[in-house]
Amino acid sequence: MDRVLKEVELGETPDHVLFGVHQLARSGIETVFLPYPASGPWARFQRFLVQLRIPLELGDLQQQMLAIRLCKNADIVYAPCGTQTHLLQYLRAFGFFKLPIVTLLHHPFPKGKLDFLRIWQRQLFIRGADRLPCLSQELSDYLLAKGAPPHKIQTVTWGTDVSFYGPWEPPGQGVIASGRTGRDFKTFALAAVRSGLPATIVGLQGHLNDPVFQISSQLRVIEARNEEPVPGEDTGWLKYPTLCRYMRDHAVVAIPLFPQRSIAGLTSLMDSLGLGRAVLMTRNSLIDLDIEAEGVGFWLEPGDVEGWVDRLNWVQSNPEEVKAMGFRARQLAERTLNSESFSKQISTLLQDALLSSYRG
Image 1: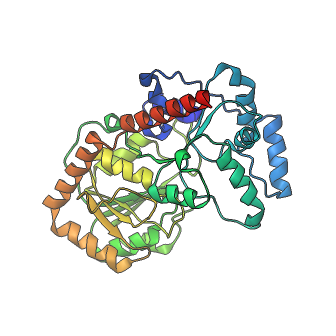
Image 2: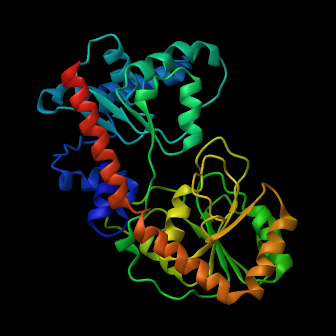
């Protein structure tokens, strides 16, 4: 997160990717960002455990050891990602770690080999968290089915950093698809070629080698370097200002996905709201926003080339409605689905967890 924080401060990334922490000071909460060393004794020990393939979920040991050392300077722990604080939550479950912990969950627990050996770990993970806010209602229901106490579970609504995208502008031409996780660019490319609608795909090097991406001049392919960016430097994958320029030049944002057990596509959906662009998206039950009910886009089924062709043809035939969809998307972001609103939700959760800890 320290890398992302620098990007936000430099204007290279919208602040919603910090999941509320950048705006907590507005609610009177002082945030202590732990430095994130790339190496250290606990990081080396964790790499050793990974090589042994022990089915033990520990989170990020190096980061958690820093948290333990500095916990006397804090009142509560907020983990914006559910993969970092397993050890702290195990310790809290047994009464060895005293600070309350709020862990934001994005996805269901991952499935893998020897999952039965992880059941006790996930029970401790739930027991050791004071609050487990979830980015989707389906994920909340999933955790409740796993035995999580209802008072720990709350669905929170992520929102976009509206100010980052600037004032709304009328849409450009064609459709653009971008992203790094779970993207089914091939289905989208096949449909785009058949429809004849000008289309652009922005992906990582090595992900767009299929010949389908080269068969039509109507399909533009932009490959970004497959590495993390460095704040303030022209390295890594495309930085947001460049990506947003490409997206702003198009009328529609496409989010084609493989069948998912993760919340893949939500970040691109936030981009479409912030920019004020209509969206075509593969249905993902972990996405709570109903783009059709809100009048900002259409759902597609996984791998449905014919469905994508039909919708892309509709886009070509209905430019004014596409424009209206984009305007409604931006209004939705300005009214409710914004990073300020999300940060207030997290602030309330943190304060609630802290008060409950004092009473306990």
